[in-house]
Amino acid sequence: MTNVFDNSGWPAPSGEAGVARQADAGPSASRGPAAAVSDPDPGGHAASVGMAVPTGHEQVVFCHDAPSGLRAIIAIYSTALGPSLGGTRFYPYPSEDAALADVLNLARAMAYKNALAGLDHGGGKAVIIGDPLRVKSEALLRAYGRFVESLNGRYVTACDVGTYSEDMDIVARECRHVTGRTVANGGAGDSSVLTAFGVFQGMRAAAGHVWGTTSLAGRTVGVEGVGKVGHRLVGHLVEAGARTVICDVNPGAVERVRARHPEVGVAADRDALLGSGIDVFAPCALGGSVNDDNLPLLTARIVCGGANNQLAHPGIEKLLADRDIVYAPDYVVNSGGVIQVADELAGFSFERAQARAAQIFDTTRKVLAIASDEGVSPVVAADQLAERRMSEVGRLRGIWLGSS
Image (cartoon, rainbow, N blue to C red; front, side, top):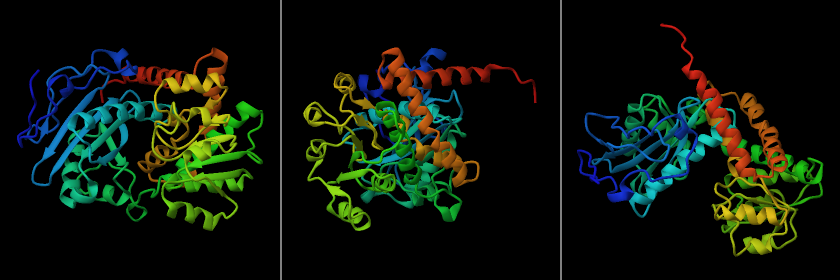
């Protein structure tokens, strides 16, 4: 298998790891053979893999600009519902293989999240390799914007780990296909507002499924991680009359929540939180919050939070079901943020975006009902809904509209 270099000399990963790896077949796979990874910039800075991508992804692009230090990968999983939409993660990956694996998984997840959120967007994602505290610069961000622009709208970027609205303002100086911008520049601002709101709606739906009432009054909810999303979720829970217990590795974050909500309890760490007799566990920190080691500690009937990839591995969901614990899939309930930035593309209206985010309640309730009725996991039920929408709506693009 041939190494792939761009004109600046950065090799794409080599060997079997040098192309998109075989992944679970997704909705794109049923729409024909995987597309070849293409070079969006024939002038010469984006590396391309001249072979079929066996993952269901439509396009994967390697980008490099040596003077600015930019090394990035853009992955488009599906455009069945419209232009792919997903954030840009800026992270010091240990290797290009690790970056590629991450961007492929993230792009696929965005396709399902956007479909379930009712958006007319497919799934895409980008990663920039490097420590943002050391290498992020105006030149690098603008170079990245040029690469996004070269895809001619097939990918719309936004914020993610390591990037912020202010960064998107810089990217937008070279690119039209950017959202998640600052309010001063016509953007929606902090997307954690509707992320937390959506998680709260999903939690209410899960409560209705488990206890027959959507009220969380009197229930004890444990929130792990009270940063951007978590601290806003605590506000919703306190207002709803729920007893709330929190934990965070950052003492300052805990102190800020306690200063505003002194009635909130504090657990020493995640294990203490899981074993504290909570009714609902809301992971809002890093992924892998529920794992083989701490699962025996979990007494909650519901797992519903804002973090991505909350379960350490797919088998955890079966173990939760065996213990009669309901898992509200993270990519269903935490889609409020992408709903917010997608709305920005039409000229942001908070009321309109919030109304759409409120529909996360109905989607969660539907997913859990299908799972219960068909005897499948909530993740399987959610995937089926997403794939059905991508197939049914994506098919409409084949209807001939006549010549312009």
